[in-house]
Length: 156
Image (cartoon, rainbow, N blue to C red; front, side):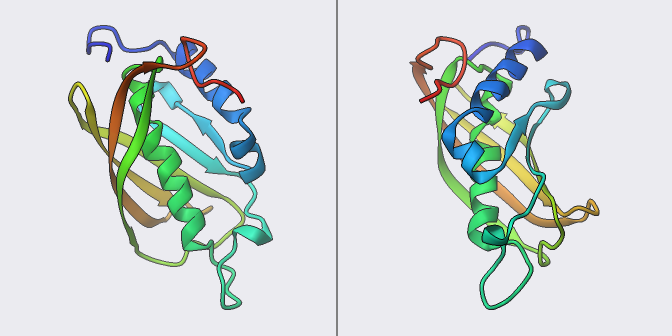
C-alpha cells in the first residue's frame, strides 16, 4: 500500500471509478462510484428502481440492495490508499435505523484504520433527504496482486 506521504492523486481515483463504473455489475445495478476530494468513497444509486424495493409491498429499498451498496462502498476504500491493489471484503456488520425511502440513495465510506494486509472501514447510507438510514462497519483484505491493467479495476 502506498504510504501516507504518497496518497493516490484525484486523477488516479477518478480513473479507478471510471473503470469500475463501466463494469457489467455496476451498470446492471445502476450504481456509480466516486471519490470526492480523494477523502471518501461514495456509491450512489441515482434512480431507485422497482427491483431495488423491498418485499411485502413496501416502498423501502430492500435490505439486500443496501448490503450490496455497503459491500461496494467498504470494498472500494482501499483505493483511497492504493488503487493499484486488489482487495476483497471479508466482513460486513450492518445496522438498519429507519426505512430507506425515496428515489435515490447514497453510501459514503471512510477508512478507520489500515495495516499492510487488512483495512477497517465504516459507512453510512443516506436517503434522498440526507438522513442516515443505515450504518456499516467492514473489514477488507488487501491483496498483493495488482489489477490486470496495473492501475485500476479490470473491465471484463
